[in-house]
Length: 292
Image (tube, rainbow, N blue to C red; front, top):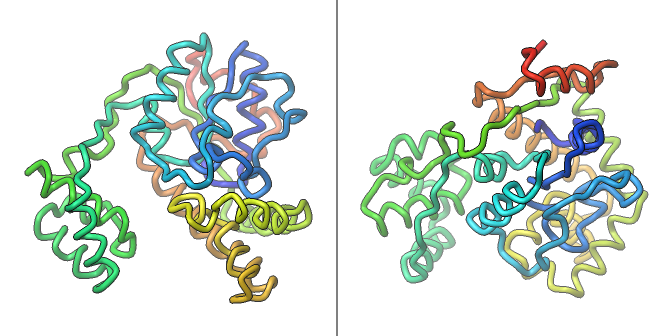
């Protein structure tokens, strides 16, 4: 695990080859078919013969569901002798390996709250959440209207605090967790280079093709980093230069949120992404020789 552009996918393949393992995707956007360039999905050649699970399973019109992912991931983990979970979507990692229950939904409550969000914005809803569940409000950004709505929906539906259903560190599966650490200036530079390479590899053409498959209507895929910005360029709202610049800026911000999420987990062993002996140090941690 770790921030975007840290080299997680390559290390996962290295580990799988040495351990006789198989990779299990925990990147929410790599679950979507056709979203290859903008998610830095490994090519068949880059996978080096290692089986990869939970890639390309959803159409771009499907709204992502962590609960559905949890079912799929655990089925794979149970079936694979040495599963190597890899990805930067922190909630998906936790859903796969830790105790995490998903309360039900109520379309009427959700519709009412979403209408209020559209009319008034997230601030008053977040204030209401702070009054009803301070712990949940502290964990959810005031600007994240979708998560605020979900929290209020669960509170109203269940009569329990939303924070009671938030991720814990109680494990379902014993695991060894390795985080890749990249100094901030280097990470910023790597992200800028990655975005430039995605554009050169044909991201605009990829998005144009996905628009014909309903990308703009996808509540999750349509908002993905890079894809949403290219859509605004193709619709004439932004210049291509602005779309690239915004993709870089927002990806850097996302990487900081990823780091913040993973840093809260005391089980993660952090290793320098560019250590010449990264694989050997990772294997030593897997073997129980500590995190050094």
